[in-house]
Length: 447
Image 1: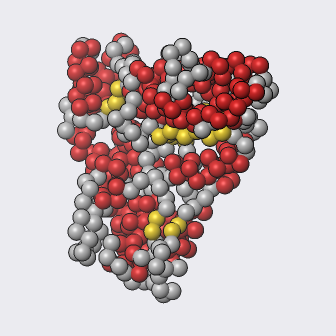
Image 2: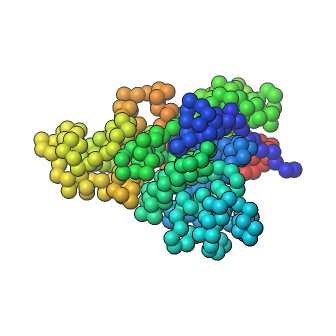
């Protein structure tokens, strides 16, 4: 039997964003949209299944590039080759217009300048990215919307940064002298702090823009998900929407992690009316695991490293640049570390490098620092030692660290065993794809 699948669409959110990109609403994204949310919360799925189709229905030329998909390729080259591959699809039309000169004078002049082998999928010498995008705009006959998923990776290389500046120049160039902007840009990232580096400083390409939090899946998703799951279960052994909603919140609004827990509870552990209690227990286990990672990593740091991490977290929370070697920052670190004298810049540099080595701090190609996991900063600033495990304020950042749990969940699928904090981590292999197989597992087959 072909297994069924569950896909949750968000057409109203897509329509709202499209209106903002078109400059038709109070939320004007025509100069660029910067969407941030933790990994595996449905962001990329929403782009592919809802937002990009809505843009196509609007009559826009959609170009999508995922910088996470090919980490071995320079982000700048990946963006460039994707644009060129899209332009190549219009090669027959361009050649026809050149032969008949049916296009406008400016378009013909542009096409003749872009006389290169399109199959090479790279810009020739002397041709800018703005000209390539203008050619795509002319050839397609409609505005171009470029989606760059996991855009923060472009900050890691010189080529990537240069490409971002080139995209800003292209955006500005395709606005001049036209009734309708020819280029719109959408950047997404799984790290709010890293994505913010594109807009916070004057020396960054999109200074002045703001990072928009991606709306996480809510009650409507839970209702549809619970209804779909319950349809596969016996009528007297089903989940309650309230229980699923609370567990989903504990799991950082990660749909596929929720599915893993729901599947195991339904198959192996519970019968009504115990399903709700079991679901809550496993949700707490996931949450406790995530918080214990923060605690463990923090306790292994020196006092100076802890102070640096805290001051960096404060800067991120206040949406201001972290300037580690200024006198003001040195004083903040001194106070936090409880030192009598200010630490030397060389000590701060060594501390930052050590934090980078531990995977807690990230540095861009231009030497800008940010937290690898924004959840760590939120945990630090929440004074977690005084917050109970059931406090709702924890839920906002628990999901950020779930990717880092040990990957041993379902390592021995033939053994039926309870879910504990340790056995949940295999869910980390799950991706942003919300298309999940609900048919066969809930019929009792081995998985």
